[in-house]
Amino acid sequence: MHLITKMKLALFALAILLVSHASTAAENTHNRAAEVTALPEGAAISEAMFKKYSQRELGRAIFDRVRARETRTDAPQSGYYDFWKDSKIMMVTGGRALPSILQTGKFRNRHQNDHALETPIWTTYGAESEMAGLKFPDNENGWALLPKYAYLAVDFTKPNMWRTRIDTMYGNIVAVFKDSIKDQVTFSPGNSWVIRRDIHSLAYKTAVPFPEPDYETSYGVHREWGHHWEAQIWGEVTLHDVDYFLINCPRFVKINRTALDNLIKTKKPIHLCINDLQNSEMNKGPRIVQKP
Image (cartoon, rainbow, N blue to C red; front, side):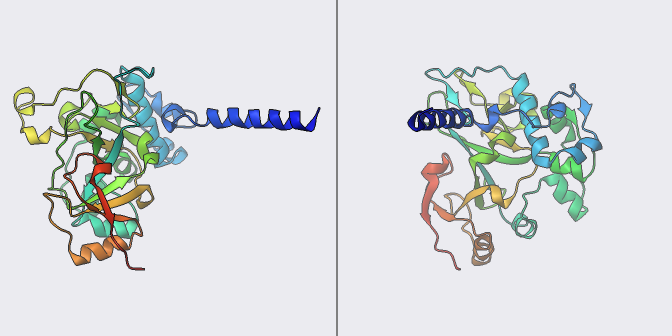
């Protein structure tokens, strides 16, 4: 075969390979703890499964479970909102959480922190089990798999999207995560502990508008508990997953020197936050010059 023809065939094969790998991680469900995804509703995750799979693989399996049960369309159509493509995951942290994040390199949830501090456990097992459709062991394996709660920053300039309100009660530092974590993320239009089963995978696409939740009338709790897009990150979340940090956002307490010095130790980009937290790219201001 002529050399040029061989080269053309090789380039064609490479192009096919690249296209086949260009789909999002949300579409690649092989080697993702499929036996966990396939567990019947209400089944328990066994200790053997924690030995067989990593926390990330188990988190992706929960993503796949939620995706399998939701009503959705994968056909790109005009007017559809693509939560995978048009959203960012942001977590508000600070205070007591920051030293722990620096020490362990991990973001922990309330279950893990309460056990570590030997304080009364803030039990949300019922709600979180209902979200995943699974029972979690009451030990470090189970606690680590449970969600780390964050916010979904949607593009509210798109049709049918409403603004979220990000609460200042959790701290004054905002971690904006890389897109690579998205296949561990589910979300809800409001507080998942109230909504429970009404959560979606981040692969969800919809042309049907989500109504702004009015929890005072619908659920009998204060509106501020529901008026936001909540993200649930299942499994391991580390500093490696952080794209950059935002500080000094409007409404938030300005960061002090000690906290800033600690944040610099993460070696992650730190940006001033120039707008109220609504859409992460609009918020991203000048980068802070960091110490070596």
